[in-house]
Length: 350
Image (tube, rainbow, N blue to C red; front, side):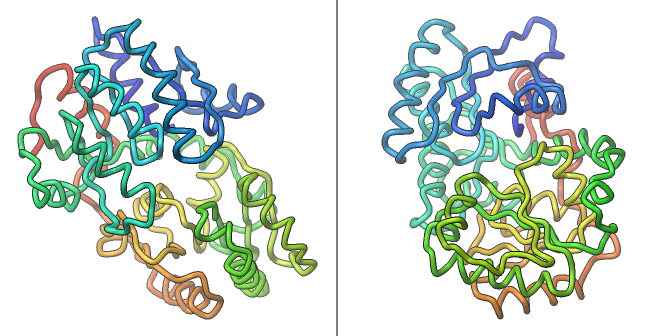
């Protein structure tokens, strides 16, 4: 999803050829047609079909399956996005083959080395030739680490590109009405990170917090399959009333719900950014964030996975709703165009 705007921007360039490689970790064949149609994205040219596994197994599988593709296609540049295992795996393969690497979403730092994503971010940035930063603080992080400024481009946030492109369809979809809730009257929840869902006591605390919130407003929780399995193992009979456990939903429907929500509770990096752009209050259930600009300039606030802390953070977030969304430098829906200009035209974005 996140690279869809960039794939479109490159496809629009005459004479530029590109291939899309999907690792397969989150690939759902039943939803694939909807996914590609919604985002206007061509089907992947290669599907690695890696699936879920341990960090070592997943990274190794991606590397061994991606290397033959690089040898076959001999690309001039490999673009990787974000901070997942496929990001660092593909970057390492390309770098060791002497292929230039471009990192989209470079420079973000949580400074929490207990997070595998932080390791992936730092390693990927070290082996990348082009670092496409989403925000000014990311540029400053890279400068502090001694990265040469000519490798860094402040291009903006391609996640916002996807949002801007999909927002009209999301608004027209009427997601709140389809879920029988009024706009600005409900809470949207997403939780999937291991630190929140793998520990039974933590997950129970979070669910009890959501049940409490559900007493005053509908709480819509599209549940990741992994999280649903953890919830089922708890055997909590009181998950009803205002708390509604939903099936995962396509991007446009989810965006429609988020954009009209009164509050979002999440541990997702992307939703921190989307709610900031949309002006929707957000509580992120994490001790820190690699996107601090969403807290200093946007609508996001952090909270530990505790009932009272979440209740207080939710109340504070709602009471300080912005009258207009935050305006963050170059979060304007044109990040992909800037990246394409750097790659194809040698443009510079300081």
